[in-house]
Length: 173
Ligand code: HEM
Image 1 (tube, rainbow, N blue to C red):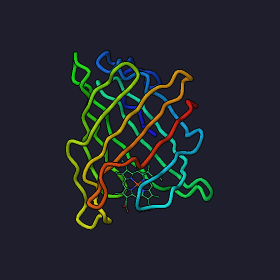
Image 2 (cartoon, rainbow, N blue to C red; image 1 turned 90 degrees about the horizontal axis):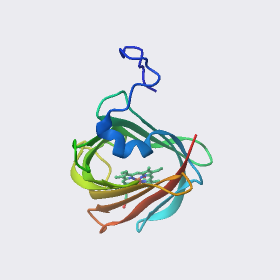
Image 3 (cartoon, helix red, strand yellow; image 1 turned 60 degrees about the horizontal axis):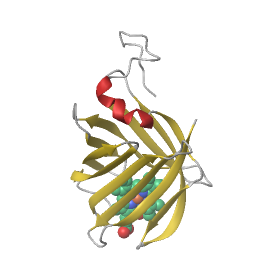
C-alpha cells in the first residue's frame, strides 16, 4: 500500500528505528482468524473480517491500516489508518487514527512486553457524523503465545457507558 520507491535506502526493508523496537511484534500483514466479533448494547451482535497492515519506513513510528469487510458479501466496512508513536526511552505510546466514519482520534497509553493498552485522549468528528457519538475509546493489542495478534476495543457513547464493541484475533500472513 505504500509507494516506497522514493526512500533513499532499499525500499523493501528499511532498518527498524530502535525507538519502535518495543512495538516490533505488531509489524506485518494480519488477517482476521477467526472473524471478529462486534457487540454493543444497542446493536445485534455481528461478525466482520479485517485486514491489517502495520509497517515502518525507518522512522521512529509505525504506519497502520485496519480495513474491515462484511463476512458474507465482502463489502468494505469500517476503515482506519494512522500512526503509532513511542516517546523515546519510555514505554509511552501515542496512537493517531483517521476513520472513514468521520472520526479522528488520538489515544495514549503504554506498551508492556507484547501488550499495548491505550485510551482516547482526544476525539474529533465531522459536523454531520452519525449519532450516537462516541465519547471515549479504549483498545488493547497483544501478541498471544500462539503468534496471533489480538485486539479488543471498548467505547462509551452519548447513550451507553464504556462497553466492549470489538474483539478480534489475527493471523500473520
Ligand atoms: C456501530 C464506533 C469500529 C462495525 C457503531 C457505533 C459507534 C461505533 C459509535 C454506534 C453505536 C450505537 O448505535 O449505539 C466505532 C469506533 C470504532 C468502530 C469508535 C473504532 C475504534 C468498528 C469496526 C467495525 C464496526 C472495525 C467492523 C465492521 C459497526 C457496526 C455498527 C457499529 C456494524 C452498527 C451499525 C452502524 O451503526 O453502522 N460503531 N466503531 N465498527 N459499528 Fe463500530
